[in-house]
Structures are given as structure tokens and as C-alpha cells.
Length: 103
Image: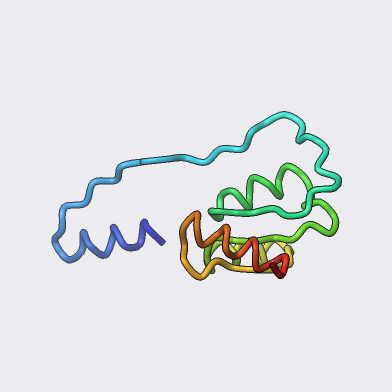
């Protein structure tokens, strides 16, 4: 989607520089045992993809996402999303995590 924005800006005559500010990578190696984990939070679609490629979400763990795009990616991977942050920030993610546990 970001690529599409840059392409449209270029078509409109803008000069657009693509600058990578961060890159999410899979950790590699075996994932530690996550049995007993109560929640898994995702702050980007790439974190969902990397996590799911590394193994399943722990049974009974609540899935909480920072925003609707990340939540849609999680759903595309078959995860049941319990909460989505209303504000797409760390504070919003924490609030959504608290809401997932009904506190």
C-alpha cells in the first residue's frame, strides 16, 4: 500500500525517495516453548507473518493487534483477534490488551 502511494505521488509529479527506516525479520531458530502464554500482541502485519511462520499461537492465548490492518492480517492467517487498539500506538495496544482481559 505504501508503494501504491509513492507511485501515485510520482504520477502527480512529486519526487519521492524510498527510505527504509526499519525492517522486521524473523528471529530464526526454534521458538521457545510458549505454553502458558496468556496473550500475543502484534504491532505490524510482518510481525504476524513472522510469528505464524515460526509456529502456532499458543492455545487459549488472546490475540491483540495495534490496528485494523494488522488485525486483518492476523485474521487472514486464521487467528481470532480479541481486541484491536483504538489508538494505533503503544499506549493504545496496552489499553486493548487490558480490555481483552476485561480489567
